[in-house]
Length: 125
Image 1 (cartoon, rainbow, N blue to C red):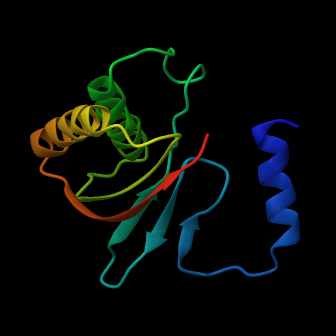
Image 2 (tube, rainbow, N blue to C red; image 1 turned 45 degrees about the vertical axis):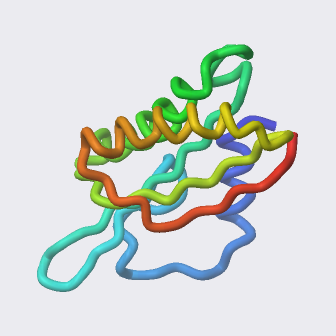
């Protein structure tokens, strides 16, 4: 099953719609109409080993890339990022790996004046 097939299945199963959603599911983001002719763009793009980066790549590069792909999606939709949520799953806690990941993520966040506002961390494959 391809990503587009999964998205179509989700669309078919959901019966709710919102008039204030200009662009909905089907891309890595959505555009929501706010008051006063303003819009909010929200994006979510996950990355995973052997698909978005090679096994063995430094944690710092993974941290950087995890935000970079989302900033790219935001820009592609005409938005300017202000905030980010960070969700990541790792098989085991390695303090040095975590420090490297944080360094890479923080570098690009600080370069782009992004405020980390939430997220989740968990152990998993």
